[in-house]
Image (cartoon, rainbow, N blue to C red; front, side):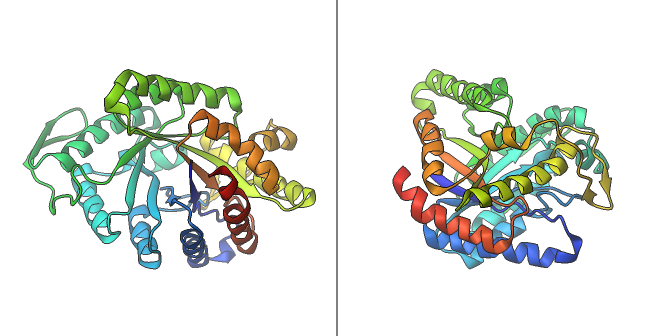
Length: 338
């Protein structure tokens, strides 16, 4: 199992400054590269202070300029917010500028507030995503493409420059619903999934859906990979663990507001709302624990056949503690799992 650090820009205090947030993320990426993590990732979001990254391809190029080996994953870019005729060319350029270290994670968009403020009704995001994905794959793999669909209609055109890699950078679809995990994997797509704050039962359904599709594809599915995203943080003591769980609970009070809740946002700042899940229940589902326990809790994911674990370590914890967690994970957890 490979390990990825998610550079998720949490911005609970405007006075901290967006420049400092992104500087912190670059510093985390440099450390992850030096310590041997397989990849880093960043998530596209607009207009809100959680997962704040409106320019993932630009940031991928920035990361590439400061690192040497680490893969750079857009996890994810929200296809319904882009015109694929423009975005395909931007992908090719970013793949060139990152020396082909780019892995393109794509998704439909999850926050109603964000999508509808940008003119995309949330009820349409699935249809828009599916058509955008088909258009994007065609533009990156075929020299000349025309289209006559519901959301795209255009005469023959060619994306320039042409992709260095055949079909462009590797692409994976972010999806939570097990049925959709199966359908996208059956189409030959790499998959990223997460049970979010959910438990083992949902995760096992997601994994089994991927396995079933891969087995049905036989040789054609041999190289397909399954990536899992979880909040994960190495806490050196029980006191630190409890403190980080309280910070994570505050994060999820904002996250849930825009993900499953009413989407109340005050001048870019997501309002924290009460949660039904207790901190104790949250602690059972998140990977916030000492190194030895972390190894024990990650071992079932290895046994499930997860190919890549994306650790979301940025949920309001200080930069110093975040860097310490990255280092501790690399030195005390990764060697035992490899």
